Length: 292
Ligand SMILES: [Mn+2]
Image (cartoon, rainbow, N blue to C red; front, side, top):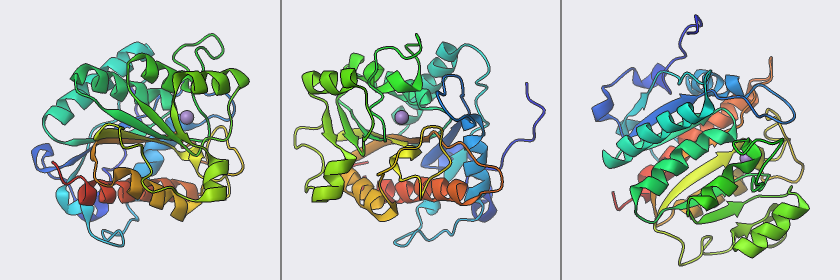
């Protein structure tokens, strides 16, 4: 549909291309942008992350997760009915999980995560979602749209998936009240800033199998200005890395996504930050997902 040249594969500069069967990580570029409520540009997120990944070192500080193989699919066509896009993501994620591969979705707006949540719900075994986000995303409807990025975790809850939120610092009074009623697990940004990271981070009864959804606005705007709805008081780099490492510790990570990057022309640091976040998360998954 698009005449634009395809972006490179994740870290293709160092890895070249390997057959999908040889790769643990399968990157799914999902440039969906439809319900963005403030700044725009998330459709450019996946391409910017893939371009910036060409600058990454193979060594992530502890190891080389890239040796496990990183396959990158062609970007999804997100132009049509969002329900069809979500079904396609769900089918791909289901297939990859059954093959014991790790799907890595690059957004695009947060709505793309719902495709993965559908796959988790259909899997028929307990799986929890660990959400890193400035916003609760728990609205029932937003601007009359149940598929808005502001509703994605409400939809996850309706699918019966346990949720644990980290870094939230902006939510409506209704979301605040509903979150409490529904018993959604949380470590809000203000509490994290005040008390530091609890150990263990996740409740003991949280599922062993988890899916991690990272909205880049969980980071402070000083670290991550390139996102549609920036919110002050976010996590800086090392607290986010610590929290991701702690969340993955001893659990099996079925897959993850990094969403809501809206590249700013002329400012490449945020794109690289997002690419580095993806790669470090691959490292945590590779080193901690021992049960695979
Ligand atoms: Mn979000």
